Image (cartoon, rainbow, N blue to C red; front, side, top):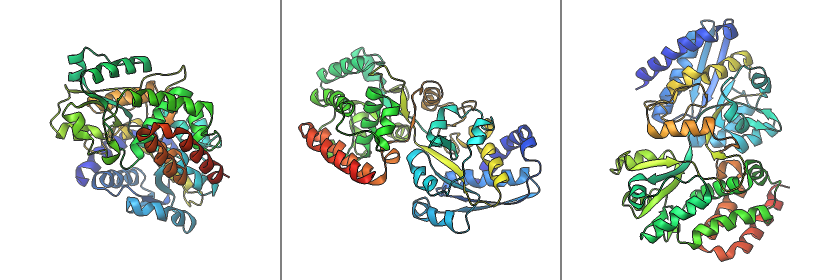
Length: 417
């Protein structure tokens, strides 16, 4: 696996190296990278990238340290503070904030402004805090509504583009004796996905981010409008019963067996559906429909590279960021035999996979509102935890809305102060 991955990335590295040789002919010294890409396939990708970048620059030595993904979450601050590496892996949006505020990430706004990172326009916002950019994305994946195409055909339904059409479809599904949506909210985060989309579609991406950063109130009319739209679905019996007792995986059989016709989920659900015996002729995907006249924001959790502010070889670090986000390298490392996700560069090619192709087109061309990272990444950890508890409670006990919103507003005023 590692050998073949290195070979595939090396092939495009030569091309990318020729295209960018002017930026990096004189690289020298040591480039230290710490990566949390510790699972087998991502590790092979990371090791291949490091080896290829090293081979492209004879005067440079690339040193790669791979650490456990979960352990890295508690190690990153110390690593950035004591003998910091040049480049590290992390996450976009609010997850960057503690390290930006602590002065531990390098401001690379000049690279975006100077045209050094072409093709990243749709994901630039996810790397922006305080009007500046602090790193580059290297992979992401779409969220959206995966549905049983065969059941839609049976009921004479078409993919909805508006919330009114979504509700009309749902009524026909309920009338047929099925549920519209499966969901497992036992571990809370799936309810966060529903809130993300309903809030972005009701109030727009900018308002959603203001709520995430504590600038907007949970008791505002805007937030109440989001929950009013959500309640329309709850009151018509759109969701499976007792979803709070299921994990997201335990909710899959309702979709597979045709008891529910759709699942709002990330693209990582597709292999599970295929393994359960559904064919691509039975499954399809559509973008969460429009509610208000606002640009369409999308959830697309994004993994990133950053330069440490204390890096010793910033020239090589910047060249590596250009290399890893180039169209050719993005195509290779996100292929089905590598990360199996979406390239962030709009000029990249996507694997011949129905859902990756649809997701890439949606995020590159129709995410005009912006790219959100998902509730538990965009909101601070404590607020995310309290918030998702409230979202799950609302789905089970919608009459508790006032108490829930007051509780979340109290948490906001305490956490963000």
